[in-house]
Every structure is written in structure tokens, then in C-alpha cells.
Length: 165
Image: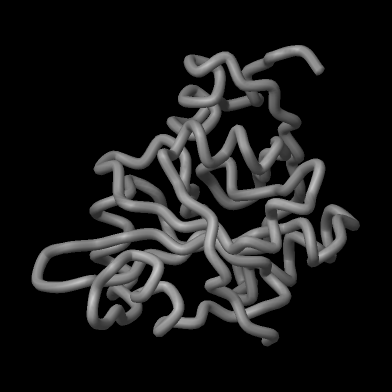
């Protein structure tokens, strides 16, 4: 697959292009009244929920954040993520804190090209996939890429951090 810049490039697609990573931009119609962003992605794109992953920002301590990337069909296991990060406890970051740190809006948070690079853990279920899809940095854009490429560009590790939703 050829490297290409997604229409209306974002920091996420720019990071992939700069790293020389092949990716597939998938645009879809975002509806402003949508609140279940993962469900919207699968509904609008027809992608299987097992290959679409959501990006969640957590707090690991005072003014310290990290990222968990899990399938949209599942939930983030906070205890498992804390163990993977080697910290005692994590909790979901406030949306405004996540937006300020990442440079993205909720519903468009990408693990790629974040304003402040954060420790990142991808659920180990991704390792068995040829391709996964994560936010491309804005609502209405996903990018498909190899899980190993996502890990390489974000400096992520893999660990079992998801549980069934």
C-alpha cells in the first residue's frame, strides 16, 4: 500500500507519513449528535468492532497521563493498564485534560501525533490482527495500519488491558 496523506491531514496522519508507515485513511460521516463514537465508526464504515480501537487517556498520578488503546467492543481494564504501566493505580482523565494534552477533541483522540507524547499500551488482542483502525485525529477519520507500525510510531507496548464490554 502506498504512503499517502489523508485528506485534510492531521498530526496523526502527518506522524505516519513522516515515519514512512503505510496506512489506509477511512473517512466516514460523523454526526454531531453522536456520543458513542466507537459505535458510530463501526456503523458508518462497516468495519468489524474487533478491528476498530479507541484511544483512552488516563491519569497515572498528579499531572501524569498515559494512553490505553482497546477495541471499541470492549472496555479498558484500569487495573490491568496500571500493572502494564508499572504504577499503583490509574483513572480516566478528565476529557478537557485529555484534549489539552493530546491536541485532539474527544471522539477524535488518536494515539498518533499527540501534542505531548505519552506512555502508550495497546491491548494484546491487536497483535493477532493484520490491520487495526484508530482515530486519524478528528471525528470522521480512522486510519488503518499494522499493529506493529502503531506500536513503533507511538513507542507503545502490548498488554492484555481490555475486558469484554
